[in-house]
Structure formats: structure tokens, C-alpha cells
Image 1 (cartoon, rainbow, N blue to C red):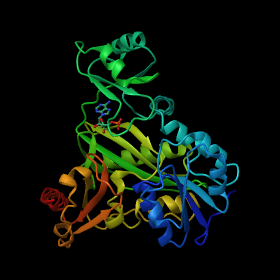
Image 2 (cartoon, helix red, strand yellow):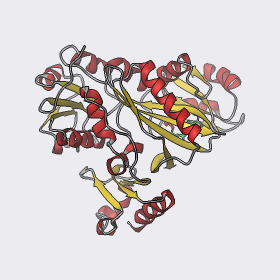
Image 3 (tube, rainbow, N blue to C red):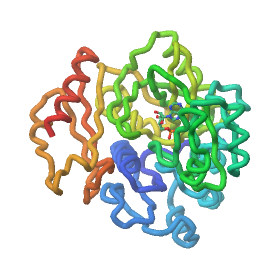
Length: 377
Ligand code: AMP
């Protein structure tokens, strides 16, 4: 059995985005050394790592240099070739595994895994041509949504087909992929997500569901706890744990779900920290980033209880109007707000540049303050 990697050891993180940055900060706080790997030299995690390696995912010499001296390797980004993780795992334990990564980065494999595991998900069909799409709409029905199998996130690579009048050829051309997944549209009441951590020896820790509100397909607000019944919350948590066990996860998994009439339908899996878990930094016993590092290193898992209700609002590059930095003093002056900026350099519309977490004794007040601070910027 793999032995825990204790503080003082070196954790390697594949990917240098904000999730890697916040994971690196958590690892360093625990006393680990951190080495990051990303094709970009200016990746925002690089600034908080002990060492950053800039190279492509298939650069074997650079990967060997990265692995050398690391006691554990993890990732913060899904679209890394599983072959990269496979190669690294020959010399260093890598969590999550290449297999977990391969399932979660491809909608076809993900849906097929969920269906085969008996996890409730939207009805779907795999399509690899326009003819197959024309046949699939008859079994899946309208409304439905066509998604690319690879590289989809934040609603990218998706085309909704509301009624029979929808132009299937246009949809097929639009996703432009070799393989797609046609999914029944779920008229949900709420979107929630559950974070679950699991260690190599099968210990798990699960957080209460967060409720997620999107704008233009990008997460805008994540509130905790979700406004659902205790039984729905328990069902969501037990499904997340069951998925983590069935996929043999080691690390952290975010499970995105729809809630419809009190029932849970699983939408997506992300085997890494997730945007909807950022409030755990300021409102929970253990942040998702620390939990990720604890799980990957085989340490005891931390408590998952919230101290207070919280609302997290994303700060997108759109707030930098005309390239001008927003006036952060408006946020910093609010004692209930915490400002997190990712030091990403150039702001662009839709780019996640930071977030604010507001805590309060009531959820309504946390949401109100978070929205007000966002609007004030
Ligand atoms: P995804 O990239 O699959 O996470 O989808 C992005 C967003 O599109 C989700 O958070 C939902 O708001 C919406 N969406 C995706 N699939 C469906 C579906 N089958 N039914 C209803 N809404 C969906």
C-alpha cells in the first residue's frame, strides 16, 4: 500500500491555472514544497510554486524532470492527455489516475460510466454522424442538447435542440466534433454540486451541496448550503460518495447535479477542485484545496462542516472595463467579504480573474451582499 506523503515532501501539480494556484497555496501552508507544470510560463500558479516547469504535455524529458523528486503528483485541469499521467505514474503515485481522467474528460465515457454504474443521469445517445443524430433525436426526444464528447466546459461545444423544427445539420456542423453526445434536456429547478474527497485506502469526506447559478453558461454565484431539503442533500452526498468509490477516485471529485422535483440527476464529473467549492476557503472547516492535497497525499481528511452560510461570486474579466482594474477597496471595506485574486495578468471577457466570498449568519444576507459587491464593481 502506498505510504502517505508527509509535509516537507514535494507535491507536483499538472496545470497552472487558478485551481492549481489555490491548491499550491494550501499545500504550502501545510508545509509541502510545490512544483507546477504548464505549457505557459506565465501560468498563475507558477508565482506561488517553489518551482515551475514550462513545457508541453508530451515533452517526455520535461515530464521526467518534473517527476524527479516529487512524492506525489496531482492535477488541476481536465484536458491533460491521460498518457501524460500514465507515464508519470510509472515513477511517482499520480492521483487522480489516468483512467479517472480519461473518463471525466470525455462526455461519452463519463455518461457511459454513470449509466453502467446505475447513477441517475439524463437519457442520452452517442452520435458520430448526422445520420446517427437524426436517428438519436427519435429515441432521446425534444428538447435535447447536443454536446461534443471532448473538451466541453462552461457550456462550450453545446447546441440546444428545442423542438422538432431544430436544424440538425446546423447543430452537427456547429459542434464540429467527430463524436457527440445527444442528451435529453432536464427542466431542473436547481443546479447543485457536491465535493467528495477519497484517499487511496478508501476513506472519504463529503461536503454539503452548494447551489450554483450561472450567467451565460459560466458560474456566477455559488451558495452554501443549497436551498434543498435534507433528504435531497443526503441523496446528493451519498451519490457523490458512491461515484467516487465506483470510479476508484483518489483525490477530490466535484459532481455537478440537477435537482428536479426533489430528485437528483448527475450532469458532470470533475476530478479536481471546482469553482463551486471556492467558498470552502472562508466558510468551511477545510478548504477544498487543502482537502485535495490531504486526499492525494494520504493524510487524514479534514472536517467538511460549514461555519456559516456563504455566497461566492466570480469576478470575470468583463469587470476590467477598458482595461481598468476594478476598485477593490469596495470589497475590502466589507468585513463579511473575502477577496481572492488570481494574478492572471491580462483580463479578457469571460476569463475567471478572481472571486469574492461573503459569509453571514443567514444565506439570504450572504447572497444579497455578494450580489451588491459584484454590482458595485
Ligand atoms: P455542462 O457543460 O454539461 O456542465 O453544461 C453547462 C450548463 O448547461 C449546465 O450547468 C446546465 O445549466 C446546462 N445544461 C447542460 N446539460 C443540460 C441538460 N441535459 N438539461 C438542462 N440543462 C443542461
